[in-house]
Amino acid sequence: MDRITDMERVKFEICCNSLASAINAEKAGADRIELCANLQNGGTTPSIGMIEMCSKRTQIAINVLIRPRGGDFLYTDDEFEEIKTDIRKCKEYRVNGIVCGILTKDGEIDIERTRELVELSRPLEFTFHRAFDLSKDHIRSLRDVISTGADRILTSGMRRTAYEGKEILADLVRAAKDSIIIMPGSGINESNIRELYKEIGAKEYHFSASKRVDSQMEFRRENVLSSVEDDFTITYSDLDKIINTKKQIQNL
Picture 1 (cartoon, rainbow, N blue to C red):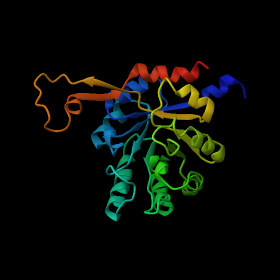
Picture 2 (cartoon, rainbow, N blue to C red):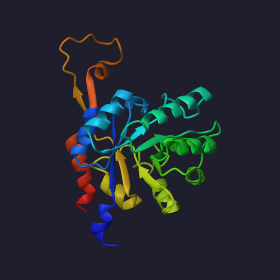
Picture 3 (cartoon, one colour):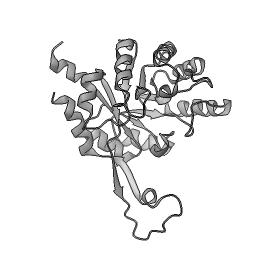
Picture 4 (tube, one colour):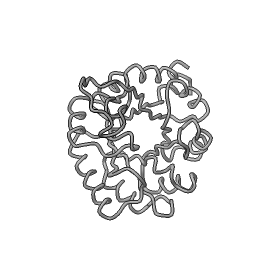
C-alpha cells in the first residue's frame, strides 16, 4: 500500500460539547464528532436540543455519547433503562452512531448488557468508550467487546492519556487486526499525534482540540457556583487546533 493511500485512511473524531464546537469540527474537515455534555466530568449524555441542533446545522457524522451520569460504569436497572431510552431517542435524529460502555462490578466488560445496547443501536454504529480503560485486562476486554458486535473501542490504553498508554494501544491495534477499530483518545494534540501515529499505527484518532475563552459577563459574582475560572470561562473545540493537529499526520 502506498503512503498516500495509507494517509487517506486515517480518520479524526472531535469530542464536541456544543453546536459551536461541532461547526468548527466540520469546517476543519474532521470525519466525525462525538457529541457530549459535561466534559469536566468525563462527558455525559448531551441534551436533545443539542443533538437536534447539531443534526440540523451540520452535515458531519455525529456519534452521541450515552452516559447518564459521571462516576463509574456499573449501572442500576433504572440507569440501564435510561440508557436504552436515550438510544431510542437518538435514532429519531440524523445520528451516525452511539458511544457507550458498561462494566460489571468485577471490572469486566458487561457482555450481555453491551450486546443488548449494540443490537438496540442498529443500524447505527456502536463505539465502546473509555469504560474499557477501567477494566481488568486489556486483551481479555478486547475479546469481550468484539464478542458484543461493537464497531470500535475508544481507549487511552488504560492510562490517563493516550501518550502514557501508547504501548498498550499498540498492543491493542496488533491484537484487534481487522476485528474492531481501536481509536486512541485522551490528551491527543498537535504536539504528540505524529509520534502516536508512528508508534501505535491506529487509523482513527479522537481529540477535543479544546480552547478556553473568557466569559463576556461584565458583572461577576465570584465563588458561588464553582471556582471563578469555571464560572467565567467557556470551553469549545478550536478550529485552528483541529486543523493543525490533522496536519501533523497528513504532512508525513
